[in-house]
Image 1 (cartoon, rainbow, N blue to C red):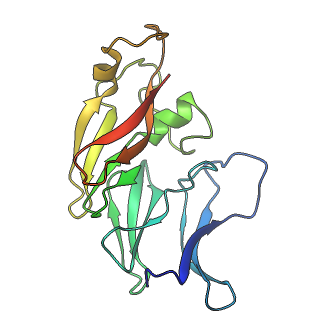
Image 2 (image 1 turned 90 degrees about the vertical axis):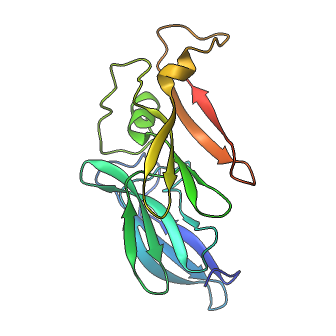
Length: 192
């Protein structure tokens, strides 16, 4: 199904305001060979205007899509098979997936939302909102099959690196991650 025939897309029924915790986005495909027919697949409660819910075809699969969602008290990644309708949940929301689809780099959308509203996801409070440089938040790598995650670098470790124009009172967050082509390194923005 992952051909040039289907375009993944999201649909909402409002604009001109930021999403709230109660807003959902519909996830679907546009069939470009059938009059641009909309095929609804799922919905998400973890999205923003800038990056949506990170909706994408899973690299290495012809039928699986990936998107972030909110489940109870956490943000997660859904792996949805558009052919079979099977859905599974991974324990963290994704930022970027390796070219082989085996690993993802993940960030804390709660922290992003707290520090820069509208760029994270609404609906969950940041447990580190009073911590300038948490040691349990940073860049995680997640196995896309098992869901196993590990913190690769914390914000506390990054803040220890001298930056020009940074002050000890700055609250940092990470986003805009991207893997290199062979999946051995990634880049990210440390923002404050």
